[in-house]
Amino acid sequence: MNSGPGAALRLTESLIACRSVTPADGGCQPLLTQRMQGAGFACEALDAGPPEARVANLWAVHDAGIPGPTLVFAGHTDVVPPGPLEHWASDPFVPTHRAGPTGPRLYGRGAADMKAAVAAMAVAAGDFVLATPQHRGRVALLITSDEEGPALHGTRHAVEVLQQRGERLDACIVGEPTSVDQLGDMVKNGRRGTLSGRLRVLGVQGHIAYPQLAKNPLHLLAPALAELVATRWDEGNAFFPPTSWQVSNIHAGTGALNVIPGDLVLDFNFRFGTESTPASLRQRVEAILQRHGVDHELQWTLGGEPFLTPPGSLSTALVAAIEAECGVTPELSTTGGTSDGRFIARICPQVMEFGVINESIHKIDEWVDVAALEPLTRVYRDTLARFLS
Image (cartoon, rainbow, N blue to C red):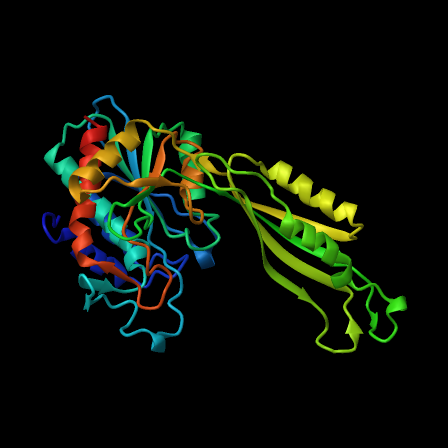
C-alpha cells in the first residue's frame, strides 16, 4: 500500500480518472477496497438498487479488539455530470495539473466534491492503523456512489443495514467540501432539513376571450402564492437560520396564446431548521391554500430532517486538529445544502463535515488545491488520534 507524502494526491488522481457519474462508481471503490485491505481493514460491499442502476456501497472497518468508540469517515465516489465537454479546458476525467492563483491545482470532475477528501480519508485511516495497530475502538469508512443522485440506495441503505445489525457508531466525519476561503475556516456541525412539494392547482380550461366560462389556475393561485412568499415560517435559532421557502418551477398552459390553462403545477422547497417540523410546515401551507379557496392536489417529499451535533468529543478533536495543522479556528456552521450526514445522524450522535474549499464544486473545470491534500490528510489522521486516545 502506497502511503506517506504524495499518497493522497496519487489516489485523488486515480479516483478522478474513474468515470463515476452518479450512480456509477466507475471503479473507485475497488481501488479503495484494495487500499484498505492492505492496511488490515475488513471490507464489505453493501450494494443495492436495480440492476440497471446498481449503487456501490463500501463498509470498511478496522477493529483491534480493544474497547473504545467508533469513528467513521463517510464520503461519496459519484459525481455530477460534467456538462458540455467542449467547455472544459481539459477532459473532466483526466486528472490535469495547472497553475492557480496561489499554487498548483488539480482539475477534474469530483476533484473537490469529493474525491480529494475520500482519498485523504482513506490514506489517513490506513496510515493511522498501520502506525497504531493496537488502537482503541474502531476506525471505519462508509463510501457510497449514490449521493449526487436520488440517494435512495446509497448511505441511506447502508445505514439501514448497520441499524439492523445493531451497529454502534459514536462519531462520523463527512468529507464534504466545507472550507470557504482557506482550508479549515469552516466546519459543518449540522444541516437543515429539506421538504419539497408539488402543487397542482385545478382550474377549467377555456377560450381566453370567454373567461366567464373557464377558471384560470394562475389567477386562483396568485393571492395564495403572494402569502406563501411573504410568510415568515420561523425565526431560526442560534444554530439554524430562519426557514426558507422557494419556488423551483412553475408550469401551466398549452402553448397557445388564446387558451386559459386547465391546471398549473408548481414545485417548491423548504429548507428548515429545528424550529419547524415537516408536519407544521405542511399544515401551514395547506391552511394558506384553503384560506384562499385554491382547489388543489399536493404531493410532499421529505428529503431529510435537520440534524445538529452539539459540542462534544468529536468537535473537540476535529477543531484541535484543524487549529494545529491549518493555523485557523474553524467556524461551526449549518449553512448550505443537504448531505448524507442526514442519514448517518439516525444512528450516530456526532456527525460533522470537513473538507476542501468549495468554490468550484459542480462547476466547469472543477479543481482542488494540490497543497491542501497533505494538510487535509493530517487533519483527518490527527482527529483519529485525538478521538481514540
